[in-house]
Image 1 (cartoon, helix red, strand yellow):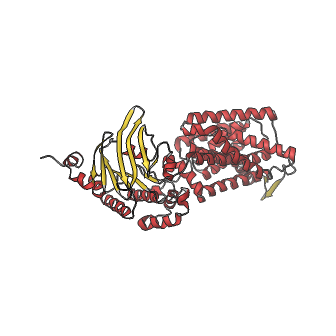
Image 2: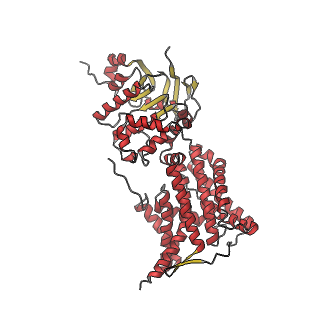
Image 3: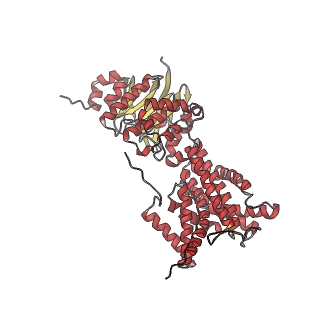
Length: 296
Length: 241
């Protein structure tokens, strides 16, 4: 086999990284929710697709530019996340029943999928704007404009979450609760509040990811589940509970997929992605980026 | 009667069908150090957990300055002025020393005072100031215990609860720990202390309660209990000749 030219390799890497950032931003949401509730919120992908449909509706009916709709989708996501926690998960969380929480998440996923099918039909949808086909050219490689924007949204979203977690007292409380909920309550931190905050931010990220997905990929009501699975792979790659790791894990997954598609075949993409998932869980369950601290 | 800060009356606690405490009554006066001693499994930790709301009481009452704590969530009890340093310290190991201390002042009424409380904590624990940016999990056992206590003082609690602060520490560090408790006592902090290190605990305690298999076996001033032959025989390894 001859090695492809550096341009092709670079082009592959760019496509992979830009696409993978979508998995990453979904994984960041999963990571936050898992952090405080120890719940894998399987409906995250469905929420992203729902957001994509809403972005499309805002564009088609009100003429709001998809990227401009971020300023609607993020606050709506925050509110929706808060309500979803208070309405659906609060009771199960109070009883620390994680099986019930997981079942509720699965229920939400199916409900959202089917609602979307009823409202918008089961066919593939897409948002096509004047700039959908445009790209940025640099050094002989081309990056799609919408994918690049999606990448920026993922980076900015993750950066904001990290800033919140590191710089604000409430963010620190969320981290503390992720590490030891009992000790956190002894500090006067309410578990329901941190859970609700994690959910609010997680769904707000789904809103932002919805913008990125709507502008880059064709989507249908059932695409969310695969999205959740991919986000789960990204989460494992990055280390569960590591927010920046989750984004990086998504980008790595995107790169793996792009390379597999090019060098092996498209049919192998998912098999290899899930194979990597299992391998990481078996050999490095703490994720690829964990740095254990030395105990003094 | 002195100023009763904490009053526990006829407390019963059960884990499922297993009764852990059988009608225990204790009290803590404001400004005092009170020790609870007893063998493993006597119910000491359970008593502390019931006070801070981590396990529910089956019967009896727990009052802080006259207000019943029963039915309140742990986070509410923390806000009412009880700071509990649990067994195992409950540090946020992945977070820095400074972040741990800041979280100690998470409660709204402590937040405005955070700078002052931090200065005070660093005065009392200069080692922590040196390690302010280090992760709590990277500290030595003694430093971790100091951090756990310092964090609990950040909210200026009316009652500081310490569960086995000397456990797992070297003898020298244990000495430092008890000196620290005395320092806090002198600063006016009210302390409820559970210890396996019975001799040391009774030495610094104004008053002490002895728990035995979930029941109150004895009580008295620290000095009285140290001198008591039964306490010496049962808990301090004094041989009968």
